[in-house]
Amino acid sequence: MIGTDLYSVLSNGWCQRWNASFEGTAEWKAHDGIGLSSIVTSAPAGGLESDFPQRALLITGGSDANIKVSPATSSNRRGTDASSP
Image (spheres, one colour):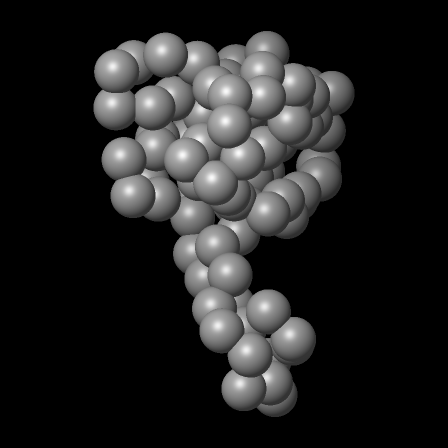
């Protein structure tokens, strides 16, 4: 979760973002196979050796043998875009 937003990876390979009112605010295809796991973490915006502020990342794994790293943004900052993270 980031703030009040919940991220999920689904069995069809898609990711979704939900707000506190249980409204879907974004979705995107992350994997060609089954979405198996996901975690939200943070990293410095300018790389590991950077003093830049932290940014949130959504990391997902799927049965397509891929790991995807996507920026995880709050729906409060981006509006309600139903097609991207």
